[in-house]
Image (cartoon, rainbow over all chains, first blue to last red; front, side):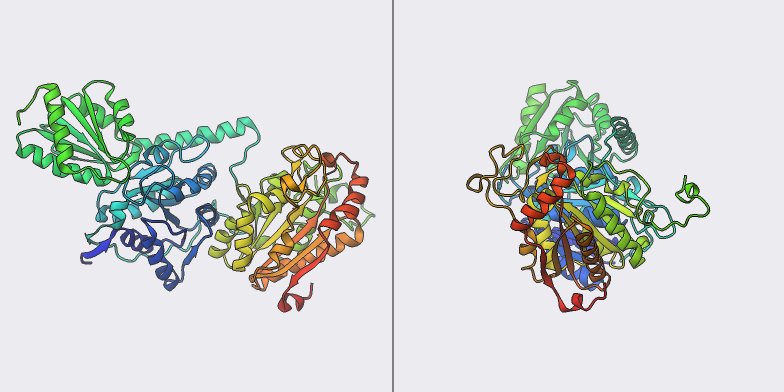
Length: 356
Length: 262
């Protein structure tokens, strides 16, 4: 395989095809419509299922239906469409069927705009629908990682029979960069032993999230919590850059994580020992590692394209051990290297290190 | 204990549960017609020999526990979304028989978009639409199909079209979609109409087996509890009043469906 110049949205869509997705249901919404457009041709050519639904509500329920049949299935959308899908997320979580949804975040609230944002962090990591559940949330920072995380997303969804979100943003969806696609994998033909396929030769199966008996529903919830605990113990992912000798720690994910890599390099050139921790899973979150680093560094700067959403998880991990500064841009604006660097220097001044 | 076990040896079993129905008491109120329609569907599934390939989609509403009464695979949809779920299931399982069972709140209010779009796409699914002009499970509130002037817990002065609009005629609407091949409205008020409804349900499933497109059987039904009537009076009331707003009859039958020998 060789590298090609690929647009983020096309890259994740084609990666899904190669990772054996059997059905895709979606509704056009900027900034991810290229994915739906790409799949509209590719899926049909491959003899698989593609359908442009009448709404994101219908799309996620089509996904839910196909997931109950035990096939590899996905949807993709952006903020407003993600809101509409929340109903389905809750049923999918309660029914424990594997589903992957890509959310290329855009500016909100409301119709907002179509520029990049990270303001769906709370929504995706804390409460993607009514009831007690979490989805696994993956946060790619470049097109290659977006491609690779599609494979990981399907594997995790099926391993844990859970909902997995791939959390990108408008910039990642729209940018073109060179990346390598995986080889074509065969589509899985067998169906898992919980799927509804007709009761021929076996007892009837029911997939439901309805438990009228409080004890039974509590048991389902306890089971879900036990499963989430296993996910927490095994699936936290992050990347670290030059944290060994760092006095100051940058924490950022996705596109902002990538920008912060440049911030870190600039700051080091200017004589500040700065490291970067880039969460690759937003749920579960690298709390323990951040707590550990908080015991070693002298200050932390969190940068996001939001009003400070991941910031709350960082604060929870740091527990006041070191000062935390926050730099956030909203409305579809992206933080530039210079402005984050200025915040790094303010933090340095606060704790009395370095001289510009 | 099986039914056979309690029959004296010199007696022949001539009537029993269909194989596709579980031998379980339903939670439905006395006089409710859900039980009749469940049985008709199960008989049709048995007669067509499709029990092992059939997947049902349960609704939100009084029939939410329908999967307890059927011995076929089932999934539980969110309110109104059964046609979307059925679309997903059928598209990845084209060789299976997929049916939705939906009430009037489910199909004619919250799920209007899903049913019309599924019909228009000609999804190869079968929908059984129970219209009893009221929300049964939540306690007798006004439905989209509540008759004008009909008193419910959320239209205490009777349904006023100036406030709440007019009863929605779903079969008439669905019949206008290009993808629908069979749309009919039936009633289960006496032996003749029950038999006729069974034939319609059978034809709707046969249309799916033949891959012809979308089929829906609307069944005018009763809700004695929330209509505040005894079962007999409810049946009479359905015949006299519901059929005026919701005329019985077949609104669309494609030639290919007509040719099916039900």
